[in-house]
Image (cartoon, rainbow, N blue to C red; front, side, top):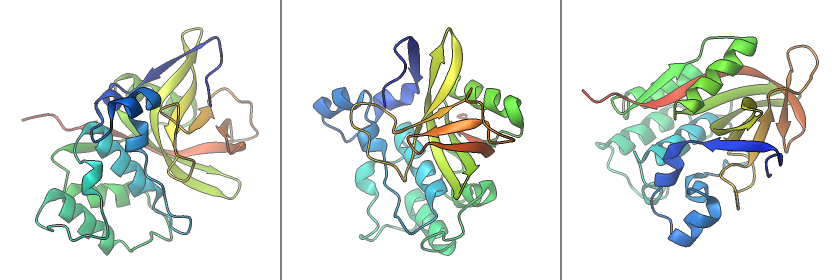
Amino acid sequence: MPPHRHSTVKLSPHLERVTDLPRSAHRLARGGSRDLFLKQGSLDGACGPYCVFMAMLGYGLIRRSEINWSSSVDRRTRLGKLMSAIDQHGQFFRDGTDINDLKAIIDGSFGNLLSLQPLTSTGSKLDQAIIDEVESGHFVCLWMRGRALSHWVLVVGLETRNEQAHALLALDPDGREPSLACWNAVIDLHHSGTGNHRHLFRPDGRRVRFEAAVGLRLAAKK
């Protein structure tokens, strides 16, 4: 999904530091999103936790080789505590997750390393809050609603035209694995939708509204 020919792309600087990936694949993925991407199961509602996992991979808090649900994980470790919290919320998150759910599973494990900052604005001010967060180098978990859609994606970059943000570049855990780009979904910010559904989610093609967003930031060192 290439950007417009007259646009520029700004990606999270953390995409250049994803580990566990051969150099050739780093070049192909322009920063390692293949290693960052996690595919959501088709029957679960765990898109929110998948986005958090992808952000933690991007920040280097965990390694992809550590994420193996079929093997035993020491539940005394941060990753073990995180998986225990996910287990307590239900294996498939059938009803989905909200910001409070995401915060609950992080606080008891990586809470001193990863800070979740809800972006409380609405409408165009929420758009700008997301843009500001990404321009500051942070990942953003974005919850969208549309026709037969309630879904989290991880915003990893921006597409700009004439120095103005035009679209959000995202990793969709329910989408295809990225190949030559660091994203597999684009959310047009200036699409003229109807009512509250002002944005266009591609490649899905549905008009969406932003239900909630949370900035995922590395916690300040004390």
